Amino acid sequence: MKALNIDFADLRTLRLVHEHRSFSVAAQMLGVNQSAVSYTIEKLRRIFDDQLFFRQGTQVEATERCSAIAVSAESLLAEIERLATPEAFDPSEAEHTFTIACNFYERQLILPLVMRRLRDEAPNIRVEAINSISQGHLQLKRGEAELLIGPLMTEQAGFYCRNLLAERYVCIMDPANPLANAPLTLEAYLAARHAVVLYGGGWRSGYLRYLDRLGHVLNQVLTVPSPAGLNRIIAGTDLISTVPRRIGETLGGSVQMADCPCPAPFNISLVWTERTHRSPIHSWLRELIAREVKQALGDAARDGPGIEAD
Image (cartoon, rainbow, N blue to C red; front, side, top):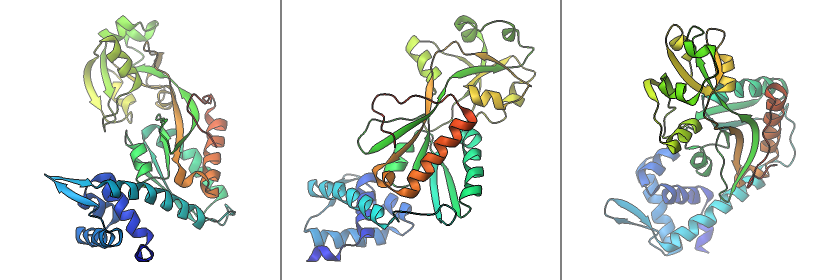
């Protein structure tokens, strides 16, 4: 009967401590002080008659029983959220705040399409866009985001993916750059001076990974964290920069585009978890995003191996 004293907030606390191996990180994510987390874990220790967590040096480690409980807790939390979601809803009346993990590309090209449609069809829906960089899958797993949009796929259990767009890289440069007058060869590309977008968070673009495999290194004169303002940076210089094609098209006539000699095509995808997979309102949003992207941007990607779509 002690188990009846557990509430879902307790299980979420346990899951976060287990995920991060840290009482302080769990407290920060929950918006409470660390003593509240400690109190909850102590309560669960008595209920489960297990130590749950112990310190080993400077690290917090989980007992074997704690790890089993954390796995079950994740399933329970996903199921209760599904049960609490209405089976039917009217978009024009629906109220919800979606948290979407995405980056510059998606905010520049996809989010404007989505927001225009939401304002027309679901005026009470709100969106919180957070940076994902390379952490999108962790943000989904931890419940920090409900949907990830980006060039990230996973075949891990518990994730679903739907491809939206096929994308490739182009090089942008000042129209007066001598490289703008002929097809760009790999040799000329390697000899050029580059403004490289690094994005941050450990993310490395596909064309850079391609060059890594060949053992080549670019002559990086400038590194920037996003493509914003690259057209103004490159104008009047001998610099070139490599960006996704659709981003290059948004930078205006002050730069000229050329095909990148590094064949590193990629997909922009929607990724979500079991927690929202069966939710009507989340399914509706995924369909809305896919529809708007297809209509406005075209060139949809084909689902590949290991992909599970709606």
